[in-house]
Length: 377
Image (cartoon, rainbow, N blue to C red; front, side, top):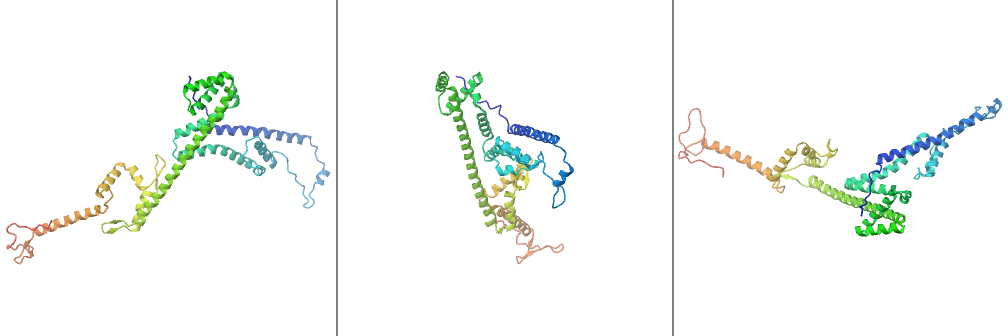
């Protein structure tokens, strides 16, 4: 049997959908504006000019000035609210209340309301995809679910009832995928599809299959997003706990090297170096700490320094070893220097050190037998 799969290559991208949505109301707006202006022009032509007496009758008694009546044309506040109300009735502005519609009194108000309508439709998908990606859902999974759900939503009843080859293939496609999701074998699916078309119930079966497929993929997508969100939230909690634990380890605990203890200023610098973002990676746009920046810019030197620290501190278990090693080296150096001075100096008959005085050197030497002091032990 032929293997039917969904073809979602023709689905509009979010940008294309947004542009298409913007174009349609703009045409409707022009159509609504034009008759209002024409009617006003026709009305103006049919009016008879007012006589001076009539104008005088409209004089404002309190101010002595002519009363000005608002024009009922495109500049009237009611014009824009009436257009917004018509769009609400037609389903273009379904999410706005009557109060919001009545508050549209200017071109700027209408433009702002229209922009909100566009954003409310675009942002629903954009925010969902953005949240999914930030929660760690693979881009391929997001794309597959989004395109499949959009494809299923685009299938109309007329397309399902079509008697042509395209309509027949669409019905087979829907029934096939629904039965696959329910765990049917290919052989049983073939029998069910053949039975459906022979009995003439293929249209109703395809409608039922479309409904089940919508539920299947929406529920699957929701579960994927919810699981990813829960995992991401748990990961954030762990990171927050580790961050607080690390802060206490560095700032609150005592850090000693040999007999010396780090002061608060030094500990704060250590904490900031590994936790405070200070540099933006030009390749990825990520914010990095000083340590991460050093690793990025000097990867080999970073590994060398890390290796040295690991060995000299016995894997971080004995940080005092670095200080002790330095002390030992300096101590041995001092002892060797002391030995050199002692062994190159003469002793007096009383055993005290005697140094050269002019060209004379004490000849009596207790070390004539070649024995020398060794202070290295």
